[in-house]
Amino acid sequence: MLELTINNHPIEVAEDATILDAARQLGIQIPTMCHLNGTEHFTSCMICLVKDRRNGRLMPSCSMPASEGMDIVTDDAE
Image (cartoon, rainbow, N blue to C red; front, side):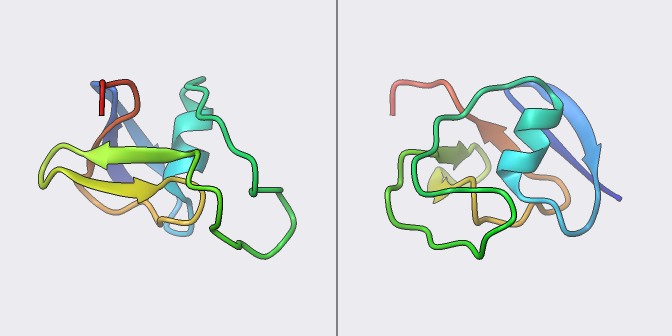
């Protein structure tokens, strides 16, 4: 299990979870257009961008694997 934080809410997720999976477990809605469960990821629309507070990096939540210690924000102005 991995521990990370999304919008100041800690969560534990499986090793193969994406940031989008973790957010959904918390009930946090992140919009997507190109993501469909059960299909291979093809990151193209970038609607699901989130930011890692640790480094300010923007990343697509649908294809970015969750990793230990991430501090993700989904709702800032950027």
